[in-house]
Length: 462
Image: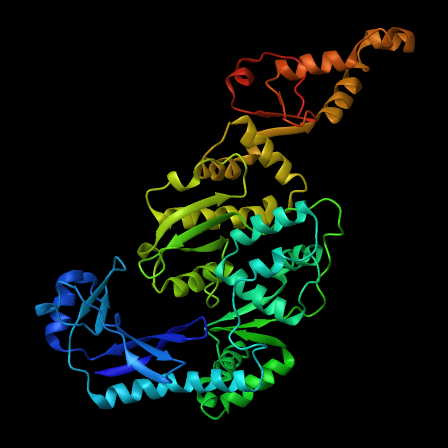
């Protein structure tokens, strides 16, 4: 057997690092069972093992599992195969000491970097606690600010909590108003996932700078990592490097009305066998969309110690659209929910290719259709051009202009003063199939509605 490399690793509470190691060349009898499991979908690159490092005892050890039917005699198993359904199948095999020594040595390089950074103070106060809820909620502030913070801290994703750790280490807020602004600025930070050491940061720099393959072996990766940090200051948090914003984030909250956090479409709370309490994921995840390194989804899967969404259980789901109800119960397939959450996020960010009234028109259309499901909301968004949307004031202006062009209105202001333009405009809007939006300020209609199809003649306002 051979070690193909470290797939990823996770640091837990500063006590243990769990490494997921890819392997090849497993015994033929294990490969045969894996081929029977997956048939034509069998993938020889899906074998692996887990290795733990204990910071206290400073020891590596191989993770083993029990109670797996593939293992004869129920003896501890030490290698696994991940099938196409993302389920792990464990097996027992003899692992040569030479291979173990090599794996421990490769993992040891990561440990050395982390312990060196701790000693040099590069990580602020070591491997930083990701939860600052208690600290933040004890800051001076108003009851409204405390409630806002508690609600937003509850649903922070793994990526957002990683950023929060770096932001708090860089400039801890002195009051709740500062904490509100800290949370509102999280999207201004960059997270380089699976970059937990200066060596890994150097490797990332090679990729970012598109260094030719034949020149990469000649770089001192650790030194290159330090050089990258000089150009892009940041902080290592667990298995990530968090880059600080190039300029000081704008303070959005000034103590007045508490704003809503933007930049998300759907938040999902996912759990796994390893972490039944679950973690949150924020969509859209553009890293996943653009295949641009680990982002929201990948970092959450790492925390859950799984490789695919299919291995997760959905505990909770929330949508930025207030009308979408019971999101968690709308999908049988978690992957479909993630896909639609991604689509909604991209759609909201593009705002109808820059249409100035896109959000207002979309909200009005959702209200008109009594939309309660995410899938329906996406269909409405894709056909938004089929809705007429106009402010009541503009509708009245257009009605007034057209009425004033009629013969009777040419009799002067005395005659026109006897006519109720507003009431006529309201009646005309109803006749043409328009409905008033919830705020009472706009009209909306669907062009293929039965009322509109039956209409004969009259002014058509669009």
